[in-house]
Length: 72
Image (cartoon, rainbow, N blue to C red; front, side, top):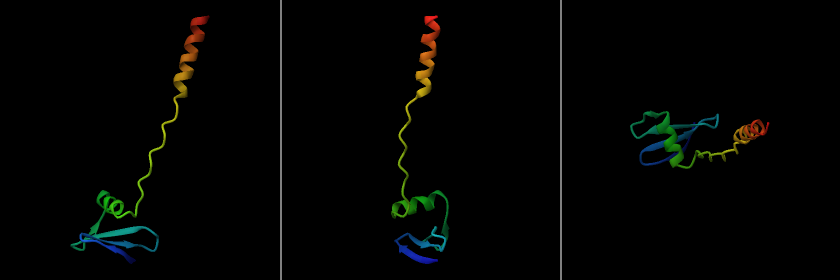
């Protein structure tokens, strides 16, 4: 692993696989949501943008069947 960045509270390493490892100032490994928060703060992880909600075609087809049934 190579050391990428050292902050006041954390040390960030990059593994050979391209993934990241984080140690806190007490030399303990940081895992889970805390690790993700540190990597996002340092700009190493990008937050995915939410996808646009697709139009609801089911509501349109349901309305269309109701009007056809009323016409008969």
